[in-house]
Length: 114
Length: 109
Image 1 (cartoon, rainbow over the protein chains, first blue to last red):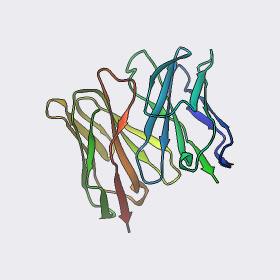
Image 2 (tube, each protein chain N blue to C red):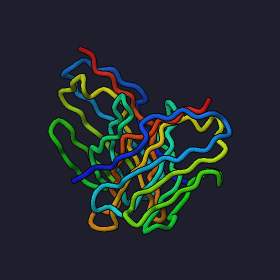
Image 3 (tube, each protein chain N blue to C red):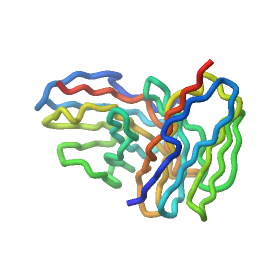
Image 4 (cartoon, rainbow over the protein chains, first blue to last red):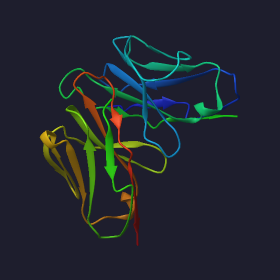
């Protein structure tokens, strides 16, 4: 069984640029959630995708957008990067079958905005 | 929204000691998970425990949903147990996990 994978591992961007982060869900999972974790804080929910549709969104501006593909992998796009967007971005996958609530996390993408 | 508080915020133990971490939450939940975040940022699933008691080796957890708290027990701690421990909950109407404030554990020789 393949776990959750994310790419890239690290990324450095400058203010105003755009970035795309990628996530492959765990085998058998059809739901992907994205979280932002600033230094020294707990992860904060950005949004969730279920069957290619957004299924809940946290308190993040519209310049944070996402996609889910038919194979359940997902992308997080951030436009007009700001310094405060520097954080660890975590992707989690889960299933709507069995203990569908349990979420499993990938290793994260560490984004630095200069 | 739901509030999730963890205590203590910081904990330093000598190797071999036991500890109890607490998670209090302010509303009914249908999902509670405990995670260990290692120094590289990876969140490792420890327990999925919306209610009841579970054990996995030196770790065990208990959630009393009616009283809105959960406990994580670490016995015979090892240096590899160091890191940040998070509890995270999901309410009946939400799709997201809400994370607690975390407990930073340092196990020394």
